[in-house]
Length: 512
Image (cartoon, rainbow, N blue to C red; front, top):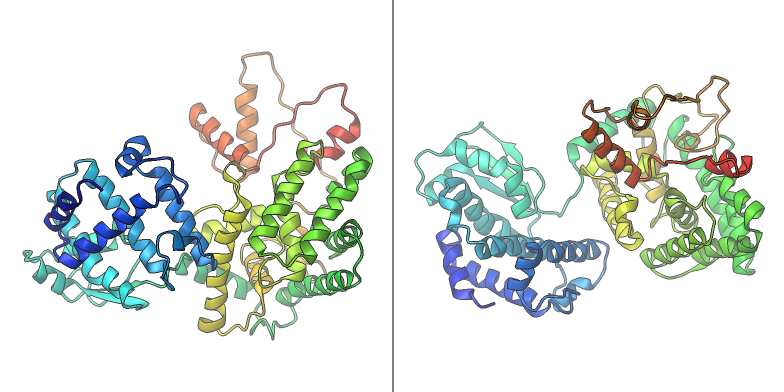
């Protein structure tokens, strides 16, 4: 770190007036630079890392370490070998690395703006101080900030700076709670430092939808007689059968076959896995069927950490796909391991249907969880585990709903995210939707687009596909194709070309 003294001066001019705060930031940046090789970074120093990609890959590595720590991992010890509570420090270090990047980029200290001085002051005096003390919340009085920075009745500016997304990203905090008068010296901003990732307002909205669908629900122990009761019951029955099969021993392939049979027959309304996958392997790749079953068998009897065994199962299924088992698409490679593991470890995994889970995830966190283009089972699982752990705590401590495991949480999300017009028929679990086998429609659903070359069939097809995914169909063709490619990368659209050499099974049954 060649410019340490200049960096400290830059921090001071930008509002970080505490000498201890300057030393702490410099120590963090110096440590990151010294550990670049252990962090898996190909750079000699931070100057080279900034010049290469503006710290993009390094920030991603720090984010991964943060996710790993959330799930109980130890990767953070690369940077903080003696820390026992690293989450707050990791959040600070990520924001400090961003500051150092702006320093290297030649940004003027504080950029001459009161808003930047306000953010920097509150970050150092309140957020970081509270984290260092192990507090879960901190409150900021607007009048005190105004006085400390010697501003001239800048209450609206302070409120705007602290309520904005820029400060949330800088401080790694969720949106604050505003208390008292609006935009006055008496306004208080309460920041939650418990490392939350769930949007509480979105969660409360889902809670309302769940209770509307299950009006006699009191808790997961006393779920009433409706949808919530049945959503748990069939999964619990399947879990008992899987645990019994594991107890009987036998080879991995024998056990895996028994488990898959249980999963695909878990509910009359719809199985937890698609029977077509196994059926296709038996028809077209019978020599690989034993390997397919063995993947499931090894998973359910393994005592390895969940992220490791799920990652191994995903890779094994991906290998089978590359060897010709085309029905093992991304959704199947994710849902089969997750659903199987949930039968033996319901506090570490849940039955999984990607589209519904991504819908819930988007509502709760503002992002997708499972995206094939960026798939990494171990990382994706740790993100999943972090949010589900937080959700479990909310339901247990705040709502007093007495959740028993993550399967209860999955049932909540399934019901809360269901279409309001979806039937709440308790004779058929809501597991019947999202790609599951349902009674065949008698209405024609085929759509044929035809015309000579150059008449826009490609764009029309893309528009139909985007519309079927529930996204708005852009009128601009370039924007339309960007949307289409995004949905394609997420595994929500698949383009299939028919050829006369293909059999009926390959083309029709194989796409179900």
